[in-house]
Length: 247
Image (cartoon, rainbow, N blue to C red; front, side, top):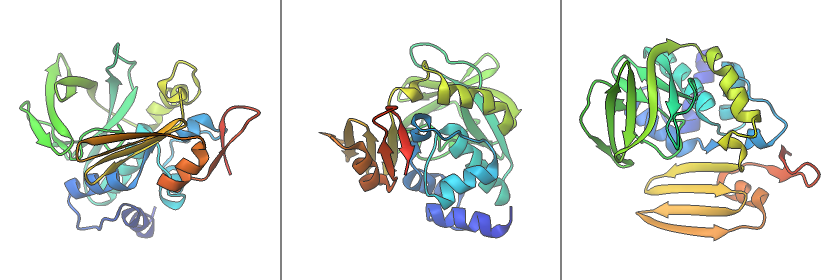
């Protein structure tokens, strides 16, 4: 992929080639939504860089971890960074399966993640085991055997395997998340984006906005109109199938 492809990506997130890793990370979170709409449509997610670029940059859509971090890794590599893809198991009521999540180790020093929704706004120091504070909260990395656990505000978010992976290795779990009834991404369509002082999240039922610590929730009747208004995403819900389809 040539320079113009990555220049268009930089314009998409409002950054430049001279932007620092922290600036790229923050600008990405403020510009590209974390969203799962394709899991509620008849469109298959393809973990190949040209497809991801077309979706996220050309179509100005978002995605989930495999898509967002997968493409962000290519941008960082193009800008001269060494990037390893790391597989992780998310931690909720129980520990998720291997490769349940994709995060990035940049230059062997920074843990970057623009694909976990409401999470760290800046890369985390990979070698530190002390508290790391930023506008999104307080984070800590902890060694758990051969793995590294990432905690946000004292609660574990996911556990990382240190072994570098290839993007293709995440295809099976990506497919599972998009198709399995048990996948939490299948429960409801949603899109979420960081704001300078908070966050906005839209589902098929409500709009939740948090600014300066103040949260408001508004019930909606037309999800398609809400996704269009707040994220510029054009959708309509199929009454026959109960899934969202792209216009």
